Image (cartoon, rainbow, N blue to C red; front, side, top):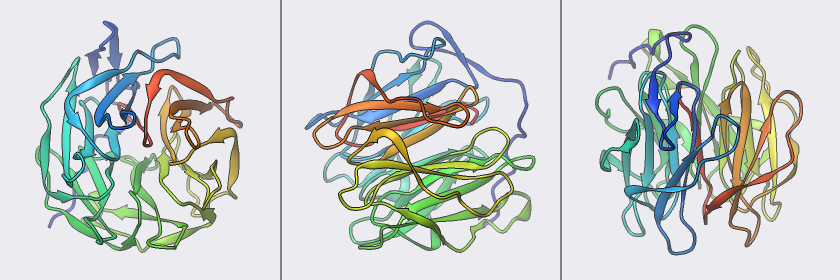
Length: 322
């Protein structure tokens, strides 16, 4: 199979779209999506307003899930969403937001999962997911006009869903992936996509992130200038959210640190908005509110609840063009 086409270079003119609140969104607009509360398997979405607050939650027509949701916004393109089907339906579905309207859900050919996928914008979109039932392999494909056939990520095994993000180094950026280990392995692993101009169209061998342990999901985001932020719920009964950084040009993650005041039973989501890393997460234990914080420079801001946003799972977060 040939490598992915090289994505558009950064710095191209920004595309504009109409927001659901009547405003105008462009590259740089940030959105969140999540599964409903309790037995409500609808998917809801909202966005960050220009004043930094959040728009009111709205259901995505025809979108239902028993697990995870993923978002990605290619530069100049539509916001893409992917999710696992309802209880008993292990297909992965996708749609996209063109202006104010979501397209109808469509299944991704050959993509089946137990928990839900991850998305990142690269030559269209990349997607990765844990396999079906007892299949703990990580699979991946891409969409640039159409979905490619699923392929296995060599050596990547997980008991949960992976995370994807683009490290903004070089002309086009470099996709990277992170995931919790399989079965009792609570270590976090990561690797790098080798493709684009190289034509190899595969992934580097998995490496553990020193000191990073989780019982649930991992999140990644790539800030401007390169490097990555990673965040995760602690191991076992540790409901603190931890974070680490991979600085631009480095291959070593910083020592894990807890995010002050951030507690979750399932794990967070990350995205970059207006130069800052934003994080959202479901609360700890029976707290089903979605909370958010941001990392504008060197510290995380105090957690705040997102008005009207309630979930039984972890949310998804994405910024168009990032």
